[in-house]
Image 1 (tube, rainbow, N blue to C red):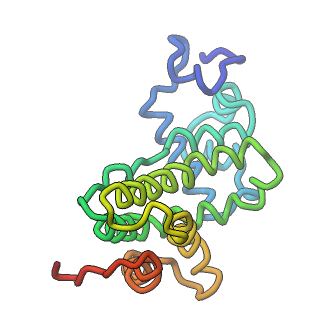
Image 2 (spheres, helix red, strand yellow):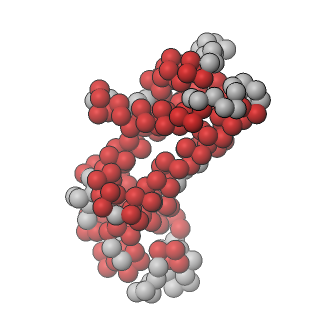
Image 3 (tube, rainbow, N blue to C red):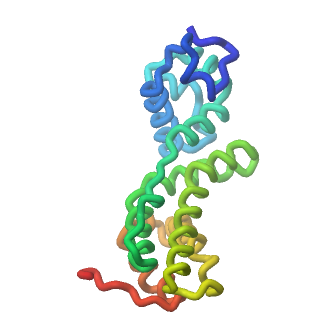
Length: 209
């Protein structure tokens, strides 16, 4: 049986733990799915145990509490989509980023909304939420802008450059509240073409280019 005092970080490496990395991923996925479906307040260790056919006592021994399990799930399922994007132009990078973010908005946006209130009450949860869903994408978009500046596509002191990530990620979070629909790939692509690129003084590529 897992050690009662195993920390989340050591749980996957302890030779006494019965929870393999693959099993942990199954549990993390179930936690995030339940959050999307019902929100943070409705999430219970009992519900996770039932969804995953895992003993509730095992969950408590491994993670200690619901907040610790949610934090572990956020850290354990971080995805690195945008850092792989490098088309050679800032325009191309931002359009590809719009598509990638839009394709995931149906999963990421409900999760952000489900956790936003609880995260404001918990610095640890807020930090995990930012590190899992916000910081990697902000860093990747900022890197795209820096590469564009280094290539001379936009001036190094362009006043709009600091707000590209906030615009692209912000509208993804805001559209469900404003229009009742997710900011999908088509919407974010239009947003980049019609709002972000003109603010940077760049011309959008045509869909065929």
